[in-house]
Image 1: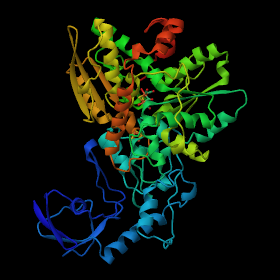
Image 2: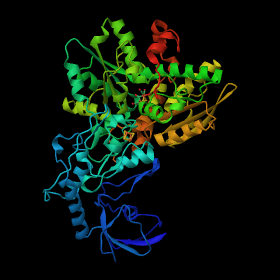
Image 3: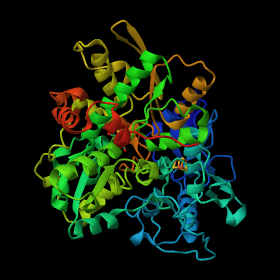
Image 4: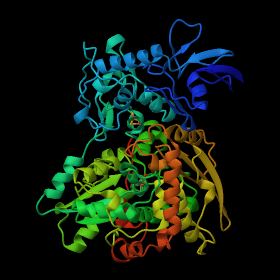
Length: 574
Ligand code: HC1
Ligand code: SF4
């Protein structure tokens, strides 16, 4: 421990602390912009590029960036001197001098950290005007819109992509005033190893990285004559969208969400959870077959599109182990267009399927040609939780005052097993609930597999199923996934099944969710909301969903059967 004095108060802090951390222990708030400490997912952005956090240190001529300057014994710091305050304001003014200032029409308006720090530091005029950096906007990806003229070189995206996701799609390019962060050789994003996980979007402080805005497409679809517009909602959306309307993270708003979607004019409001139950039927069947034959193990879950793209790029030698199941929202689209449409007498060309997802990679996934069946896309338009929030606001719907409504049937019926897909560990727990009963033929005493829950980046569990001991692992965040995949590649893996999600926390932490602004406690609250929904379900196992049983009886036949393989499974590419 060392003694430091901040604004005339002396405290003891650990010697590896920065000035910023020391100040936090005294509840002194120093403004920050580029800095982001997400150490529980192994991301600390300490590049000190913005200098918005400078403070005075006694005996030093220059102001010190508090986020990256370590404390030392006897250090005397002033965080609130006029010199420090003026310098911070000037730094932000200089950043703004090379910023487009189109805040009113920026997708980040109201959520932008440059906007809020500028307000907090009392920037009231544009003092500096000069040369502006201009770069072409990268619109090549179906998921992410990249406008480097809004980049403030904070490097958060780069740290996230390199340190947490280990994808290395972004880095600093060129020098001096021309410096920009982007893919090597200025390649368009869709020609890189980017997985479209959207975690760079989740940490970008400005509008430089945002989701591709599909809201106008949905409005047009709702207006189009002769079309039946079906919407499905992913599990993780219901515990997060309330945040956009001032509610606590983790507040369960399923009923209001359904009501809002009906108010917006969707013809059918269905639940991705129905298809999560369907995925479990197919995936548990596939898992059991592979375990019986002791081949292509460990089976890897395949519902996360960013994870799928990651293993296609990085582990092409292991393409025979991921499950061949499409993700639930794609299965939902296939069932809607090839079963529900027929049942209702609606030509599939007149049906539009919209997915509301916590994820930006789902936008890219929906466009993958191999997911089509008979030339028909499963899903037509994907919007994120944030985009749905904007639509609700545009329509003037008072979300907080809505009465609860129920999903439509039959594709709105689901179980507790389905909703836990929304958090890390949930997919494998749902699969275990069904696989265990399929293997033994006996009812489980408890459906709660606590060992696979939690937010540790890598988890493992041994689960006894009859005579069989199943070795299970869970990883979230692509860096953790890489660790597991490398052990499989070396032939050292002992696992039968592994769940992998690209985003820290799983879908609750998806790149399309309400911004966490550096507070990862939000993930814990959202996960608690997910498990609370599960506990309140009477039916908590996918194979007991009556609508799923009917779908197999009347249409699909058996899990893993011929029709299932055509509609619900896919293949992977190097
Ligand atoms: Fe997910 Fe999934 S859980 S991938 O995170 O398997 O996006 O919520 O919808 O498809 O069910 C996302 C969430 C979601 C799919 C399901
Ligand atoms: Fe990296 Fe994910 Fe962003 Fe792509 S979307 S650049 S993989 S963080």
